[in-house]
Length: 281
Image 1 (cartoon, rainbow, N blue to C red):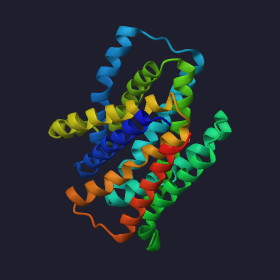
Image 2 (cartoon, rainbow, N blue to C red):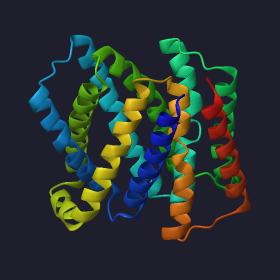
Image 3 (tube, rainbow, N blue to C red):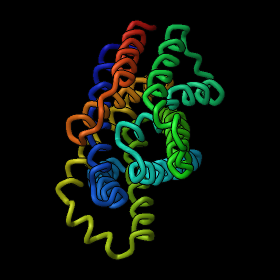
Image 4 (cartoon, rainbow, N blue to C red):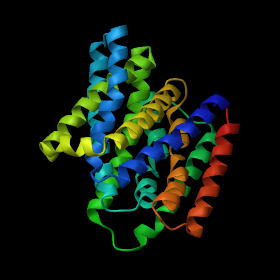
């Protein structure tokens, strides 16, 4: 994996953690994410109007399944943040994603990671799960567990599917634009159905937060899709999940969450995994 991809993915990780922090602290996470989608959909829709790409029949199927996974992920995230700290829910939801994504990519796309990449991915997964150890030691909130498990599985599945979609489309920007517009529209409908007419009032009240988080989300996701279009899924997913590092720092700095020794050790192990990925071929 080249240094440009690694650098941009680390930057995307910071942006990713930042918008998650804004959703976590919002008065209504579902409304925040619905507004984010609307913000991201505007430039994506403009791109589609100008370029007018026409997806093939097979690509429409990929887009439909991917939209379902993305919407399910957002619902799970909102449920998890309603029941746990950012520094707990985020690591638990993202911990096993690189491992799942690597396994699914191997089965579905025939992508085989090198020994170093496999070791680095496993180390990062172990480190992220270590961050969630304290939560699993106590009584398990069933709803929280289902939410984080659903979020992690959805991310792993859509990472592999979106990687395939960028290749099937032949242009990662066209595929990403279609995905953003369709996903944003679908989640807005879900939010309206669950929140009722008060959704618009809530979105107006947090409009500044929505604009900022929407911009961060668009940039982060675009870098992720670009990286998926030119690299194996496993290493890209592993680098994306280093956003957990930033979520821990943001949680401590802005949400007054504790910084334990276990979190520090896990962070150092994650950095080791990044170095291994950077050195791998």
